[in-house]
Image (cartoon, rainbow, N blue to C red; front, side):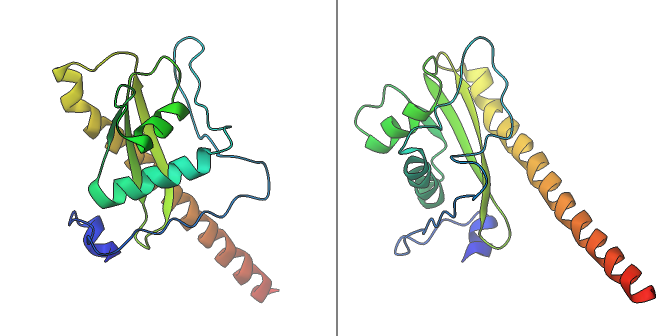
Amino acid sequence: MVADFLLGKPWLAHVEPVVHHIPRTIGSGIQVLGEDSEGDASFNFHQSRAEATLAGFLKAWVRTRHSWWDRENSEDETAQQFMSLMPMQCQTALASAFMTYDGKQRFAVFATWNQQPSEDSNSIALPFVTILGGYALAALAIRKVRSIEQSQISYSNLQAQ
């Protein structure tokens, strides 16, 4: 089922996505890998409900590939909770989750706008976020391969002694 989803097929309607979060023992809260903004814009991932809100986002993303979120969407409770995590100046957010081949969610990329994006920026926003996420996913894969290589080298050095 995960393989079909990663190939672009829709999530099965009768199957509820499961988000099982294992918090890190070192540090607390959600880890931010990088951030770039002008002024005092900052994400609110320190909120007590941040992990539950992101779990709701992930479920919505898996079920419907819901990527665009708007602060003015007062009818959707998930949207309001999600937008509460974004900087206060943010009016629109684009979020994309990145899943590995085994179905594990490693990270998500968020892009925010202080005003509604224009048609031009709207058409290139999703590919831009996907490319950034793809680079990060590739970097994680390379890091994992290098750690496996290092462990193999260490093991072979132990065997040679």
